Image (cartoon, rainbow, N blue to C red; front, top):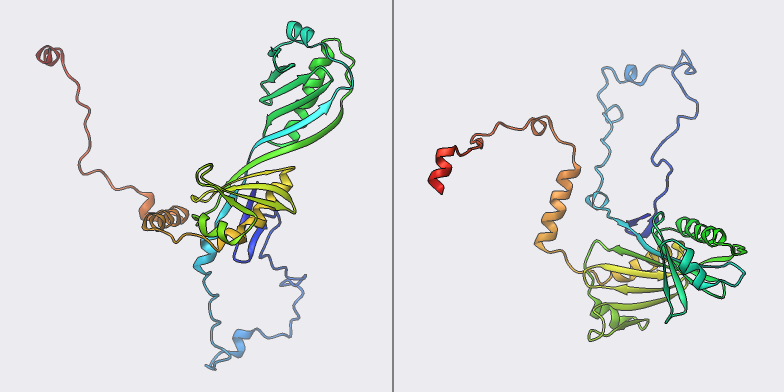
Length: 290
């Protein structure tokens, strides 16, 4: 999932085609024959009206430097109910990839695909963690319910919901978190306890951890809320961005050079003037080293 940062904020990437101009059905066949081409009028007349049109202005450097923020979903927590009493001892003895935690009164079960972990209670409540999308979380939940059904329980898959989503992203600039926390009352900065600023949003409801390096950790109720939280926080932290250092400018220059198409001279690498030769030691040389 990615969002595109523009000067007026963040805009979600769309799959449509931009900048395509249609000709509205006008082709070379439906142009009237009595219409004289423009170049015949301009022959022999050198005026400003017949001058060649100005080339299109080159795109601004800011458009080339338009950064892209990738939101990584690290964990999706979901819960559901099987609507029956579960014998944890039976699950621990007959189940696969299970661990009975008697002190906590629950059984943990793991799946490999998708790689998730479920906490199962005797009341029939199951919590699943470790998925990287909402679809994966639902698939894993149904597989856990099927595994319990195969153990002989009267399972009914009900009350599925996504409880929590953890996402991370990195802003293309550093953030002056002290000045940021001083301006906004929703920001809580305790450097003795945590190196980041805790910022709470209420619409959408989300909690963000903002670090001076530009990293942001978002906790929300859904993936859409995570993306909305990033869109809401970007204009606020953009005001407190750190100026680019010389190393950042060099990295940006190298990124531009790597994005540009290679020329014909760059495609053909020059021959090495001082080629490296592989030197092997003979038996006599080995004896000499010994």
